[in-house]
Length: 333
Image (cartoon, rainbow, N blue to C red):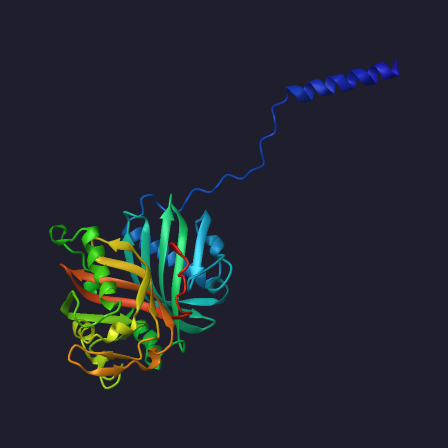
């Protein structure tokens, strides 16, 4: 009798379990993206600010990252828990953002601090469905290049932002197309690769180049090659010397961010100096020793171009020396 009662109780319990609704799966729903879709200029400026603040706080988890998000620093791929994500300590005072809502990309130049020491950064972010899918940064740390570069951070901090010509909105009727803007910017790289002083150099008369916070044009005495004061020249005059022939290859050209409203283009590239040109000859016949560039070396650059009509009016860049012919971490090998 007792066995029969126990058997009946077990059958009743089993029936009750089989009729109950299945337990819900214990998986947390993915939080809704905090980045609007589409993300326009003001939104992109906020994303850059959020990115830099997260880096300074060493807290990438506060960012809306895509599941397969990639991050490179100086061309080296790493997680969002290494490199600057462990050493950045504060956001600096300089900021220049280029916005390309059509491709979901934005580029920026900024100052930051690393364990209390200031540095200059150029970078790019890409959004996919409201999340950061790609991030790359290029740095110039004080002491990692020519001494004249080291004054740039202080200059940038005082400026806070770029010249207004960079941020002015160009009326729609005067804008060049994306393809035309990219074409004009690429002329710069064509002109500098194996430069001989006789090519097509599309610069305005007031063109300036601003590298790591220092003007490397119209700045007498800054940079000399032999007896040629190349730093004291304007953009077109510099290219017309043929002395940029020290750049033997411009590779992995990625002209990715096109700010159509402001008529600006942002690129990341590598300049190779083959080191086999011991001297260069100007179109006027002057022979100039290449000095430092007599050995293989490369520069990784984040570079932006302000374009006026069909001419380059301003160049802003952040770059530093890297191993010769280094792969920048993106694009084909």
